Picture 1 (cartoon, rainbow, N blue to C red):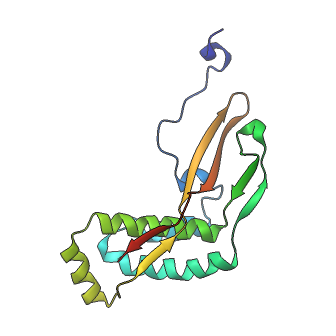
Picture 2 (picture 1 turned 90 degrees about the vertical axis):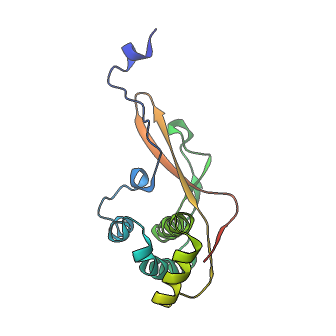
Length: 154
């Protein structure tokens, strides 16, 4: 039997899974802050670092945790559920990494001097996202912590 006949309205997801897919609340704290700094550029690097440092402390106080996952809908048996603060730290860290990788060393040095940004190492746990299409039930999104910490020298 053909899958198309069983599920005629099924459309596979072809774009990468992101934090915006995972978030259930479009007006969440995470969405608001990420929209404020979007797109991440050299011009707003200082603000991104400031948010990163603030929410890194919050994430340490308010970590996510593992819960028994519903394997029938694609969750891991011991599924990780990050806190909003952990998600923010991860997304802000990824933004800082993107800015650094897309800027020249001279541009970064000029900005650091101009904005009074000190040299530092940004360390965070990256949260990655995945989806599972469960025929007859829907599409479900999950998050997990990437193995090891990500470190960025600024």
